[in-house]
Image 1 (tube, helix red, strand yellow):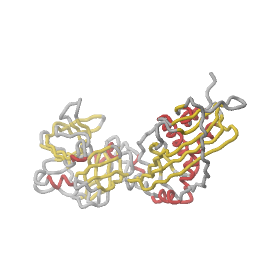
Image 2 (cartoon, helix red, strand yellow; image 1 turned 90 degrees about the vertical axis):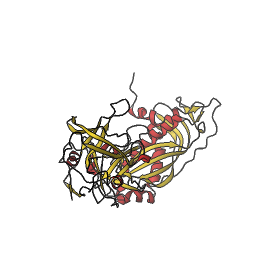
Image 3 (cartoon, one colour; image 1 turned 120 degrees about the horizontal axis):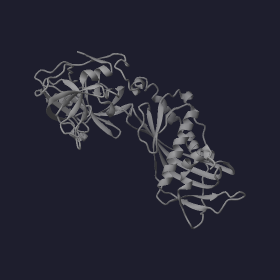
Image 4 (cartoon, one colour; image 1 turned 180 degrees about the horizontal axis):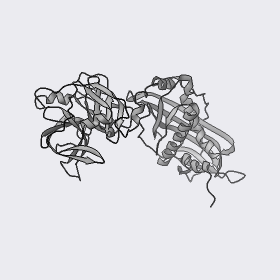
Length: 435
């Protein structure tokens, strides 16, 4: 069998909207396919834009079964009778593939930095992106005739774009653009399929307000680019000295209310965990698996205030991350790098299972000291659950001795929980606490 040429192989994905929409047996309607102009897009260099943009998801406002187009097969000298095409879920899949391919090509042409999605409807984005761009299909019309390699006719799309700022943790702009293509002669099917999406994107990047939004983030990655790499050793980062605090008088029991205030809930898209302040300038620690995936995360305090936390250092093998928020009026927790005694009482504070359980306190003992995957851990039977990850393990003096990382739960061994020793956590991100 002769191999399918590359452009058609890609076309199968890009124009799934034409091939997999529901066909009507009643013949073709008179489809009106709008044609719109394409504005000149603003290159990244014109605004000195260095921010990275990631396309995150596709969605649609078109009703199931709505008439969207007509399709005919080219039979050599003429086209066959057309059949109506109606919207179904496969159209959305084709839209997602098409807009993603156009996104990468358009941004590359204009000189913008982009992050390509790894799979359909993949909402995970690497931490190098400053903005996420969502695409919602508002309208689609087409009247086409095609064969395996070529197509002709008209196509039209209307797309609403939502620009989400990682730094602000909100949608900062919404813009609707259109794109179309028309050809009376047979042309390459890939070019025919991708052009309306490229034109809709060109009209988006021709908008001065949109490009200015991207330019506002220039330099935002300067402090975090290094955090995108998971260093394998403790000396990858330059030494960072953070002003901390000394142990509280009266121990844990007499200071539990203040210690609870120093522990936060971290919300990172659909992930949630805990963290705790270690410095007076807004520095806090958590697990890497809680913080990675974005430049910025939401940090919720015990009084329900939310601040933005910037991910500035990450060591994924050791599963530790350093975040920084604006200075808040919260006392950091003292740290103790001394190894605790076997059997000594310890306490965990965190947000198990839900942010509504923030500040939960549990008590246990030091059960042992383990080494897994060449890393040291503190073992304890203190109760922790999903959402507790990144929260502190404290000794009787109220000082942090470890960070919650692995724990027994359903279908596992209850009461066998592992914590990263605080001295290891600091070492692997090159942080030193000074009082």
